[in-house]
Image 1: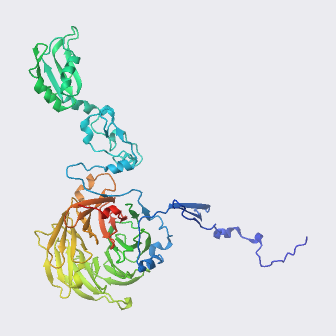
Image 2: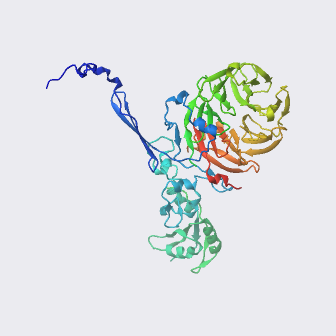
Length: 283
Length: 326
């Protein structure tokens, strides 16, 4: 077939095109996939990045109603004003300047005087953090069974949410902070726990020879939970050396025990019960 | 409620002002560019470029056509709100601090700081409706108060000017003669710099906030001290609700306690007090730095706070707020 070479003389011939003039490469148009039933809106734009490569930018936003706005007639007019100053290039979404907070902020009522106003509990529950339930005392709180002492419930229920864990003491993001040093960590755990109950230590003297730990325990249980009962025994003979120690969980119980048991007749001997002298770490 | 966070300013906020219709919010900061936002969704409308120093305060006319701003670059500028165009510049010999338009938007009171030997002063200027007709002339100049005047506002019917500042004394001046009519009592008044002053929506009383950790409510005609609200933090900003008996105080932090700050972020709060019972109703947390500016929307259904962190937080109240009972 013969083709007339001069059919369209005005059309530029592709072979004459200069490759370097493609800076104004036609970009695909901006697409807006309007808010669907969840309010999700997608805006797809194309740009040339620094290396002159075509880049597709997809912005996904959720359109959500924050509040009722009732505008006066003039207010409606003002809504239609063109942007000026630094806002000239902004699109309707207000760019990244305006963000709805992800946190729900409440007008927090002040607590009555005296009660601890620490990390708001609602923050805890809202974040879906684990609520620990202690198996021994059955209470919700900040401790597991191993260190269960009722007294410690007065410590603030520090939220174990991610935000607190990552905001380490020195505020450096990303560094690992061991649990014992984290903000929510129970201070004075472990060793101090023992020392504390050892402050409720009662010394029992004038015990009969055949007294054993179990006897002391049984004797003192009536006053309250006993964490530890010790009877000084002579290893060679197996006989009691005449004295022993009882550690109560609660100080009041220890007091009661002293009051009642001091001078009490036990196994034909008069018991002497008093506060134990503080333990000295010697040897 | 879910506050809307607006980070349009790189430097600390100094002042916030709603227009009369409550659909625009003007914010001033130390970064030289006052900004205007839509007050419903926080979308930025525009910025006013032209100042060369921190912008300390602003006021907008009742028809929302004119904006006036005071800046540390020793000028106060008049702007067209819609276009962002600078219409006129009032030049001073020292940094300008506070502006307030009087009823009718024909008069403006501008205060200037003490600077290089010049004392602080209160200037009254006339605003003409035609910007080309605008003159720089002062109608009245009052000199004299010691220290900086942080805020000066018009009294009822533009007959008086109320000023408060660094010397912790509130003064009422006659706007025609410039004579001082009333002065607050040193015993019952504030003990430290008064940082902020806000009038009630009907203009009959006003609230002052001071670094002495308290805010006081005064009658605007007699300067009688009506109420005192105590907080634990120095007060940087105050505002009153136009529809309920609430006042809001925004505070800062003592310089001495800065290094021992709680590392929990977002704990600076705007405290709500019952205006008459002087009792704390609650606090709204969220700012990462001391709160420097507070403003209530004239419809009373939302308020915004501006902080040292450069953020403006716009809060629309939940229904619960209106049901609060003490």
